[in-house]
Image 1 (tube, rainbow, N blue to C red):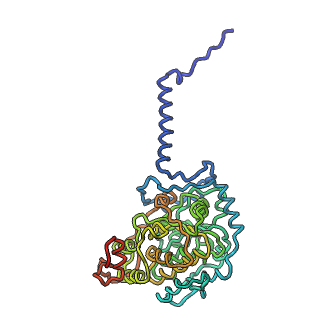
Image 2: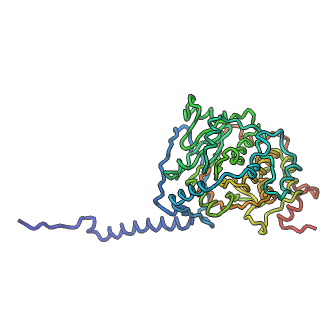
Amino acid sequence: MGNATFSKPLLFQSKLLCFSLLYLFSTIFLTIYFTLSSTKCIFRSSPFDPIQSPLFSYPSSYGEHKHAIPTTRSSCNAPVYFSDYWVVLKEMQQIWKNSTMLGARSLRYMQGNGDIFGGNLSFQKRMSYFDHRDDWIEIPCGFFRSFPISSSDQFSMEKCDGLVVVSAIFNDHDKIRQPRGLGSKTSENVCFFMFVDDATLKRLHSLNLISRKSKEYNIGVWRIIEVSTEYLYKNVAMNGVIPKYLIHRLFPNSKHSIWIDAKLQMMVDPLLLIHSLVVKENVDMAISKHPYFVHTMEEAMATGRWKKWWDIDGLKTQMEMYCENGLQPWDSNKPYSTDVPDSALILRKHNAATNLFSCLLFNELEAFNPRDQLPFAYVRDKMNPKLNLNMFDVEVFEQVVIEYRHNLKQGGANVGPKVQMASSDLFINGTSSKCEGYLLKMWEESHD
């Protein structure tokens, strides 16, 4: 019997081919490594987090991923690293278990004198709430209109006692987008609620995304809550402000919340987000910096210039009231890195400070207009007790969400009342402007 002989496979007989393959795989590895290193935004510390596959598939006609807005920033100056999913889940469950309901005195922040108020508060009345030193003063806090939802929806909202993620679509202005990167236990520990009006619900019916026979609607992880807008504000944007800033009233038993504009798609598990940006930082609230503006007046001018709100005279009145009552431009002496947020993503712990801030801010929006960047710094700097705030970098915002354009409609969005527009200079009106000192300081000019 002859001896069997073994020869090397042809693949390994060529030294040149071996070196070529080694070079190729080394290049691929180094490329991936340096790409991730250069972004400095490696958010997940563990590659074994139990990320689920998408829980819902839309029909192609819905187009939920159309019109994404590309980002221009590829690096983070202040990267955020998330802890292991299972560690975060256990820690958040323990926090919620140990949390007690707010006492009756702090609940007065939320309840005010009832659910419906007759008209908005006067400026003098609103100002008086900033002047008190008593942390437990009773203040009116929305709603200034009724917020009609079904009793079953209200019951499900009250059952949410941990973290709630909230969004809203009115006038079919956006798509319902499913969050990505959810851990396997997240849907059991986090509530997802999407508020919609009749026009949005009609669109969802037409695409067969929800059944007309059912009184309770779910699309993927989102519980869809129908809100009848018959008794709400005529301005669609103001209706969206209700669930955005009065989450603590809609979800009275929740300990943490995340507001996300419907134009955004969440790309990171909400448990990791709230843990990293709020709990680990030991803050009351986390919100992104504005990508371009630092001073409130810059945002006010852009609001008029780009017709984000049509009543220029109303904008001028609002800002002059703030200037007259102590609004100052941002400088390094303030404990915050900017005066202007990007409020599309708000993460908060439900406590006395955030509830007070939300109530006071909502009152300003109800009195003037729904542009929440305008009263943000004024309320933040005037309120007592002070808000412990994490204003994180824009690069972080762009890594944890994807932003899309609103649904394109003929005639454009209804952003405000169609009033006669004033001159476009807004505040540069000679020496009569009450914001002259603000502007001179903002522009670093001398003022006698």
